[in-house]
Length: 70
Image (tube, helix red, strand yellow):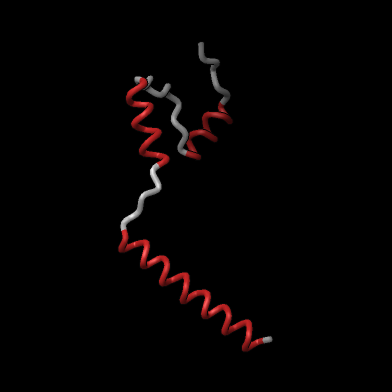
């Protein structure tokens, strides 16, 4: 049984984009699949290399600025 929400609570939920309805019930298989999808940390090799290159460049810039302005 759901309580009737106050006007302020409804306005807050509407402004923040919260849904008022009940979420659909998932089966055990759907829950397991959703958990696997949400906890998957695999990444494509191209983007892993791009991120690593950007990290090295940023580290070099920070070391340069630290040495230059020290």
